[in-house]
Length: 302
Image 1 (cartoon, one colour):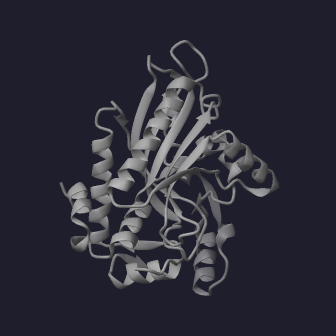
Image 2 (cartoon, one colour):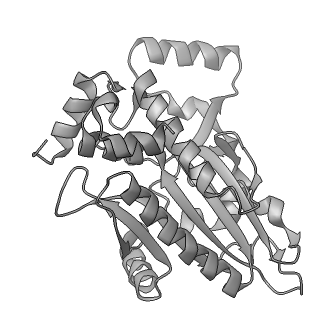
């Protein structure tokens, strides 16, 4: 496949029944073949992490709203957040709601904000549970969650809801940075072992507004974020398949996370965009997994 574009990838995935499109950009189903490859990648990541002693935790795809508010996410990424609203009215308001729906009229004002939001990043549910003093050597947690970000796009790699395999490290600055750097090398090695032309580079988050550009520049300058990039929809602008983020004390301060000696803990996270890794494999090796190179199949189907 020589053509790199969002449309060619989308059309190829649809034509081979790998994704099931809807009328909303960035929202689609996944086929059994797509899910099988995704699970194989997840199993490979698990094998890579088997000796790390990580605790496994799983949270639902919704997060306490107060946790999001404490995290500072709305200050940096208000355009990506997804709040959950629900109907709490009486019979008369319900009748009005149904009438508006049937007539194609707006009905958002008849709903109220709930106490939950959609998870914007896989690590966010964890931080309240790390509060207090960490054990010697800190803690490492392994999670995989559905994440929501409101950025509709025709690019199949830019989804509104997707899965991230996330590891979080909490401890001293030295422990956290060393762990992040170790996993950066692991991530590069894994993707290259799968036959993907992966390269690492410094990166920044999509901060909102004029002030966000300054935050992004500072993040790059301090090398707080790295991404592993692979051409998926463009050779010139490769796609980030995984990211490695050093938060410093951004979460340790508001959530009261302390090291063994009582200092504010630092944290880092790394995340594999599971659907993006799968799409990169289809884009690189073709849409039929049984026809992939033998060396790649031996890694995923050992």
